[in-house]
Length: 205
Image (tube, rainbow, N blue to C red):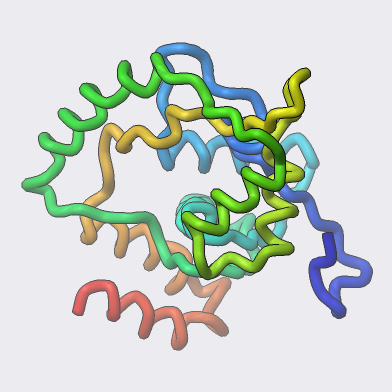
């Protein structure tokens, strides 16, 4: 898949996070949480023997990348974030209800099986229906990568249904801002601080 015209000489590694694409699902009884994905990304970097590297992420992956950079600012040289700047937050008063929703939803999702589609074309159509801003060629690439074909020709998405479960907990906005400041305002990244500080303030306005 093309990355960009000026990417010659750069090495790109695209991760299928746990429960996504062709990566394994977490074992029965386990959950998918932001901190676990951060651990997985850093473990992949260690496996690749990358001491310093850049991270690009979209949506949830942008949130994960932000936390990786905040916790390990000496290793993350640059961030490219699309549709995301830091992890999702919630009011402290909402954490009990969030935990309740997660606990009650988990067994319901664990009992479900992935829905088969008659073909990959039907899976593409459904993906476009649910994501109207997605380009058709992007939907086709996602389906080709993220589905398997059954013996009867039907297509089934490979991601873990449990990814739809609410997180057991979320950070408060104060915690998120502290994460962001740890990277954005670090002296090693002072060339990015002015722009990112404006974004940081925007989260609290």
